[in-house]
Amino acid sequence: MAEVISKTSLFTGACGNHHHRVDDFSLSPVSFGGFGLKKSFSCLKLKNQKPLRSEFHGKQIVFGDAQDESFRRSLCVNLQTTLRIGTAQKWWEKGLKENMREISSAQELVDSLTNAGDKLVVLDFFSPGCGGCKALHPKICQLAEMNPDVQFLQVNYEEHKSMCYSLGVHVLPFFRFYRGSQGRVCSFSCTNATIKKFRDALAKHGPDRCSLGPTKGLEEKELVALAANKELNFTYTPKPVPVEKEAATPNLNPSLPVPLPSMSANDEKTLVSAGR
Image (tube, rainbow, N blue to C red; front, side, top):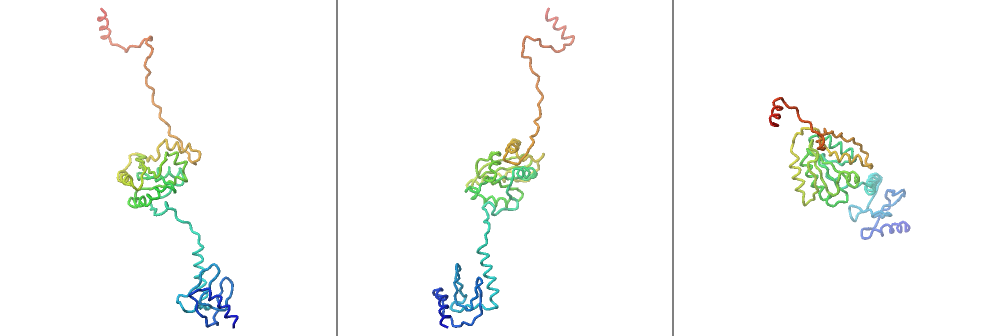
């Protein structure tokens, strides 16, 4: 009995001010990590774990046969929650609307603009390390929600530096607006302080309209630049340039006779009489 009490004091003494005297030693066993303990204590401190305390302070914790299963389940859930390794959501992935998505390649960019039809498309060039891009992102999401008919395409500068270079993008945050057969209608850089520029562009180019021609998308020189970039898996056949008819070359040698236009009989008589 003395030996049991001495062992009990080792556990109860580790609990600080929350320990109390244990009077009952005839309790059901509970196992922690494969070790069976035939006694129950008011506070147990496991290695690398926080002490287990009762919800009713001053009372004894009892883990009986009926409580073992629920205890194991709760302990398992807590461990899984603590050890779960999750991927934190990136700032440019937060708050995205249904009409917002990120571009993964030059081909996808070209196809998205070509297949947009008369819909207004906004290219949003950003960088994960750009503070202005991060601060502006929530407002862009709000504007996207307010304009569900506008397609917002995000282009990550860090992942597509070569493509951005071919498109002539050298400042961030940067935006380009495309619409139907007009192609690019405007491009600019703005921040939170100049967000009015973005709103004005939406108001100007956002209303419904019908294009009288095929969707243009990127400009010809941009498509050629993307195709010439060996780092991009993109091919494009330039459109044939129409050959203009050559204009009649004037006679620059005065020594050669210049043929006169044909004259009528009346004109010939006039010349003869003038020569007399």
